[in-house]
Length: 471
Image (tube, rainbow, N blue to C red; front, side):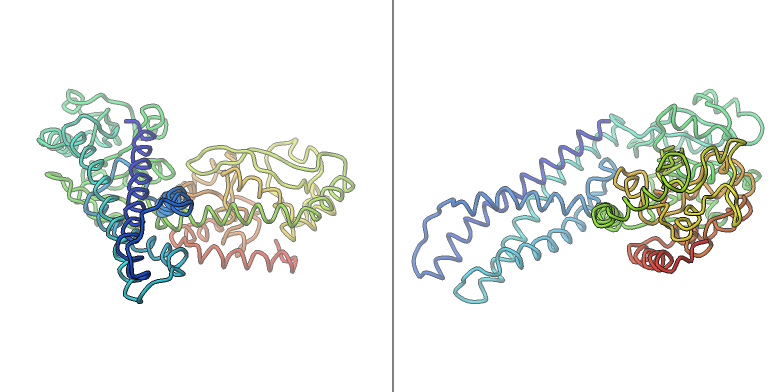
């Protein structure tokens, strides 16, 4: 499946339908609205204003669709949900266009405003949904006839896994599962299932298996005797770009946000991966980039001052950079103003503490005010980090944390942040137990993520910086 090509098809369809609807609406105004205003027929002249609208209006629509997540999961669209989403977004978009572009039009009566609004809405909605319906129907046909599918891994090697596999494969209409193999959990694999599917290994290696085989869907088919393994499996899957589904009789042992989905002849429970609505995800990213760019510009004199003071405080570089683990477990280089003496970790990775002799005098000040984190606005713009999110850790400490708290991997579902609720509530951790203690605040944050919560955490962070209360 070529996802980029599919997204391009939707983009072209949306641009065409928006431009075509705008053109017909322009003609409608010339033939119906303006003659009422002038009391005589009006020639249809495609003016400069028309061509500006033909250029800008479709771009506006595509940006609006991207903001609400229309082009995400492009092969997993429900035509019924597409209908409702297209209707609502068309209503919102036409309202914006009406109040920004059309409201200052001179009309014969206010009734013409209602006519213009209705005409533009119907034209845009009908053409947009029609083209999307065609694309979605073609995709559905290809999926149902097994022409395309999602690389799927089956977790389980028992009778229940075998029955589920045979049921899904025997359905006349496929739902998109393209099974590449299975992994076993406790004990050896079942020889009967090996006759149907390749055995890819043990669940303990599931992360490397997912990467190696480009897995998109994971189905858990576990016997009642293996229920104690479900938490461990879910923790292993945290932070992976996969859709997780389980057989229905596991519902009572799952926690979190789940929903029932009937998959033709085999109903499964889908573990919802979405933390925030798509529009909030887009808005959060836009806010991250905008604030970061603004901060880099406005705080440039402060950056210069801090750079000079760090350089004078002790020999060594101004910036400190080392590897941290980010979203989906991907490593990246984090930037900070150096607050410690050079070779502070010559004896190996070590967390700082309140009276740490490795911290310079000026370094202690910028750590208390969080100003050592200011260079991370660059990480935010690059996409490695967000303004608000769990603080990123090094692989060395993550390996220690997951031994005591396997659910730490839950944090890898989102971008790490410059600040976090755990940072605001707890401050810097001085050892692994304190890191685990701080973890609960970050997990709660992820389960309650919203743009509003981010704004509150940013406000508290600014107060900590101004008051120098950082731990």
